[in-house]
Length: 169
Image 1 (cartoon, rainbow, N blue to C red):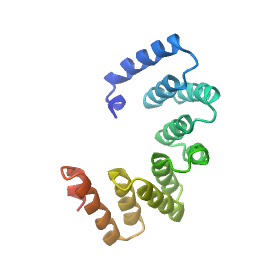
Image 2: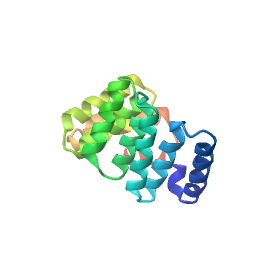
Image 3: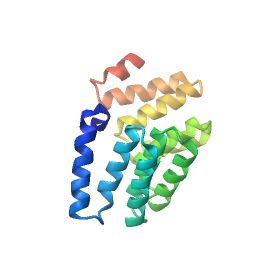
């Protein structure tokens, strides 16, 4: 989130460049730099950095997750779905990947499958406010405001001062 603020993008890019200079075989700086490019609407540069990260650590679910997250941010839903499925193939318990995949599937109008992944994420991370918020959003999209309200109430129990959730109720 702090990267979205804009002023942090340059700082993040500089730190990633320095880390890559010190050890060019680390995939993490490439994934972070890739996301900074995506946030600046430089998708091709971001994808290039993701390719490098994946080539350095092809079995690391995190690099595939970050690719899926970047593609989702760019609105490339089908490509994001593929990267996130790869993440879950490598780590079937990756709750954050399940949540982003649920969002992507909802954008692709795959409502039942989106609900499945959101429920799975909530089961793996029952104290994750984002999982409950995702379930609430999906319930609203499925015309189930009663179930959405239950999820929002759970979110408020977990994070009582969240004004966005309070407004939703």
